[in-house]
Length: 376
Ligand code: NAD
Image (cartoon, rainbow, N blue to C red):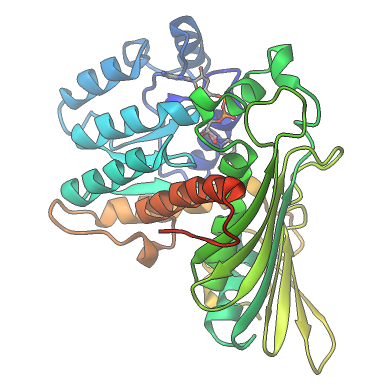
């Protein structure tokens, strides 16, 4: 692992999720920008002190020189956005597969350069767009793909959070500090942090790509250097249109990601805060509420359900579903053989490049005089 020190947010989540299926063992890491914290983190995880590193360059150098049966198979990169590209590049160049946090990099150029490396090495890269790991999101996608809703016409995707409603970055909060700093977060604030999740979720469920945007970006909290609030109209390459909202200043909201997709015959509705239900609305019959764990669900959803109906299953399992799909791909990996993430159903490098292009186009669109800006 690179990043994920004791005081970090997502590192511990990755460790829990990776461990759920008993197929992945954490063996080493460079866990923090602070070498002392890295060592403390390794100690708390009972790792071999020889494999708790002060920096990630040292980690890759030492690990790649270990005998093949002892060195790492892959690395999870869970650092702030400006520390994604360098460790991912080093990992791929050292022959290691990669799990990496979104947004994949700091800039479009970095993202494209990672894609070139993945294509050249044939190694596997998984991007943790967590929400696509939920079984009922897979069911929603199945509803679209199987044609049950008819041709998709309208998409509403909203991602309101409230935790940045005040200038938390001025209080020393680590997570707020780097997210609101363009030198560490990149060109997008909320749009990069959670807008990318909303866009990816809409694209995953509708099996289409956002191709044009018309955006308003705001930095609502005085003095904030990046957007903390966004609203946009979107067009999909399939002809569907929609609305995407991503805000971190909706005071009181927790993580209220939700999506509604409407086709010619009906629609679906899913909320992250109640992930085991999928509401299905029909033009000519009563509404249905489908629940995780039941045999009436599609095989696409059933393949990712872990517990019987009525037993809450959520965020960690969704994360674990990405790890499990990635692990299957790693087991099938052979040098020279190209692995297609689509086949295993986890987000890959192409989603990462598209996500960065989305962020950069949204930022362009917010200051453009043109109504629509195309995502190239
Ligand atoms: P954080 O600030 O809580 O933790 C970052 C960690 O990285 C810290 O331990 C820090 O010391 C370490 N770090 C920084 N520079 C380093 C370096 N050079 N070498 C080693 N470690 C270093 O950040 P976070 O909130 O956990 O976010 C990390 C990443 O995860 C971001 O890219 C963020 O967008 C993403 N994220 C994704 C999700 C999701 O749902 N998939 C949720 C939260 C965060």
